[in-house]
Image 1 (cartoon, rainbow, N blue to C red):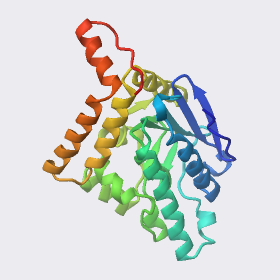
Image 2: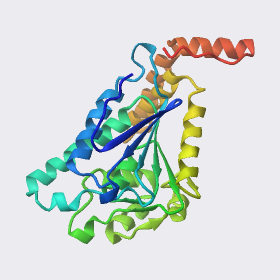
Image 3: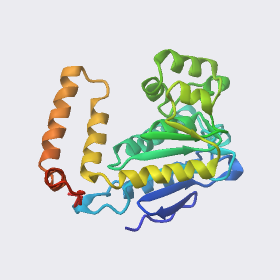
Length: 269
């Protein structure tokens, strides 16, 4: 599968993983308009994963170039030239990026090295897992600029951590270190350095590659669809997802392999 080339992104196909690196280290990988456009176009390509049983990658790892920053946030220099309408459209474009990340049929791991502030934290929040290096810093500093989160932070942060902690992070603009982010449930795991971080992310994707790709995709889609629903309505989504999964060839293979006490060879359909 041809993933394309993009001015601000580096792509590396590493076994079952696609590593996507935001590559603007001179600007701490801030989300300039070109980065947003590149992410948008790449995600259009990735949305085709799994069509007709083809799974060229089983997970996406999103990280930032260099040691200092995952994504420092929105490009404030660029934003400062915008009027309110242009800034709002900038935010809506990032909404489309984050929604597309959530809609991918494969898991996405944010490998956060250094700063994940503002838009960087919001980008990580749209990923399925967040792994962090020990020097990672997370925060929503928008109130320091007289602004509020505009890329989904006020929506997703209270779903990842407690509502009270989300409010404290947004109202105070106080950045938190990796160990505190782990303690409050913002990140899944913390690693000593960037090399260990990326190694762990690749190991996670390798583990996922042993599972049924259709089942993982169905589970991700169902869990996203359940957000905000009542228990009764969410259980109906789960039932529909279970029904669809039961009809797949992966399910037939998985159940037959279990009965035969052998390893499953999932066809991916």
